[in-house]
Image 1: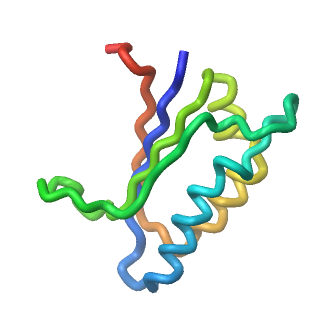
Image 2 (image 1 turned 180 degrees about the vertical axis):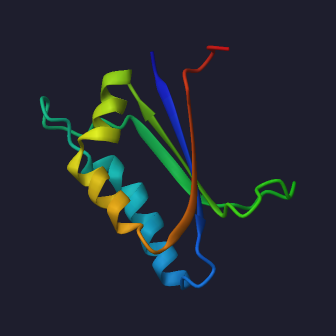
Length: 110
């Protein structure tokens, strides 16, 4: 069972572009920086993301989206609750992100 984790960010309008780009680079770096406590290896199977460029105009104020893939619910739980790299990243967003949306799903489970 693979789990897909989608995160959308709305950055505060006063935040400079360089700070947004830095946050996005650090978000993408979590794939290498999040290490499983047992295997001592990266456990995020895949990740991607970047700045919105949808022509549909339905993104609201969300400007950046990221997708991460986990092998199972336990890896996702560790990422969300315990992984020091992820928790430090979340803390680093204080003051620059004003809204976040998260959607998770199992492919094919309706």
